[in-house]
Image 1 (cartoon, rainbow, N blue to C red):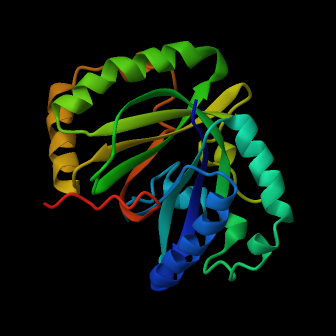
Image 2: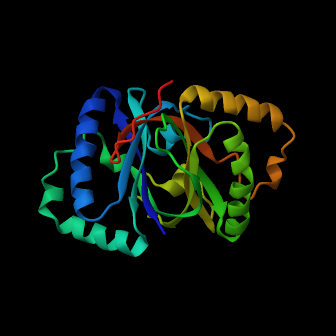
Length: 245
């Protein structure tokens, strides 16, 4: 089963091209160590949020964009071995400096609990970070499965819901702080793929209207601490071009 290294990073907007060049160089090294794919998405609709949000998670400044990204590996054991080897690889240490503050990046290892569809040709991604009680894993998975038909009916291409299994605590930022996680909660890193932003926005309006009677208190997580944002693909190692639209 696939395994993901998920990350969120604050990047100065003026450094977009430099960041793109940097991640392209990183991909060559990751690929040499067996990574299957790398996707980097640039935030275009990422509100600051009153309590939790992507910008808050990485302490983003007004001149910074949020990047939502993941590296896909064959499985967790493979990823762990690859990261150990990467730390010893001279090619990794020869990479140019990151054109952003890496100390504010949050990252972790995530295993999918639900995945469906595909994202070839996706021109827009919705990224999510969700605090879920570990005891509610099965309930959360069932909810994701049940809700997927609603997304496909409104034009979504694919989705991945990935459960945090190796998520470190950081000195300054991390996924736990990002969602104000309490003891026994796990961070879920997920995304939904759309053909374009217009389709996503139209779907959100339709679902908001149709789902006005949904009882959020019955969800297997605290929705007030979940956050999400909209992102456009910046780099995709598979070379998928965004759909026209």
